[in-house]
Image 1: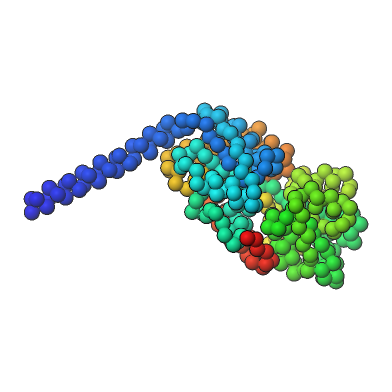
Image 2: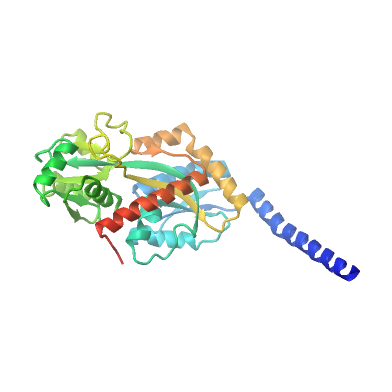
Length: 330
């Protein structure tokens, strides 16, 4: 009996020592973090909205954490190449990832195979910004409101064509969501980027487009395009007189391009907590919020749990839209 007691005590002591050996390095890592420059991986080319936001956040995150923050662009395959690269990065908190609605809510349904798992491979930190999509039409089109457009589409099935920056993009799926909820037949015309699509819209080669607000608002202000409605749940401060699609006649409609910060999933919890605290301070800065506003975006700042819950809802919504649209990419 005494032998069993000694053995039990040894097991308990061993467990305590093991727990201490595991916990102390984690605590020390969090206390000393960061010990070298931090990299934010951006899954798109330099100059785009994702890149701009990453550099803005990185600049201020460097001040909060006391280490340089650099941006590394890993573009290709709708964001999948950069996401896979970040997912496999060392889990010491020195690699972060600026994800999007595409990498974390759309691509899992759109692509038959993904080189990463958007849920299992990443720890969400916070949304950074939301960017509305604006429904715009060429001024010669015979409709000025959502209701008029729906009536025209139902009277002329397949006659309205809508452009997008490409298959599976947020503007494309914004159009597919509209088709589904409004029960209209419109033809999708994909382009290799926003610029050529907007160019054809300006030339009346396509009738309408759902595009990121910053890309089309200059043409709306110049009178070259007609703003019909905004895709978000509330009106944009940049275009306060333009109604939301939901209030203009399609109840329940909401589609937004969003951007958020992630870390590799196995990053230690104390390190994640330190990053999350610093990121929260950055996103609360008036200067950062103003710069996001200037880009046509809506600043965001939330807890990891709130961000995770948001991603889950977005994944379900866009998964349904992808399925109903029949869109699929290899």
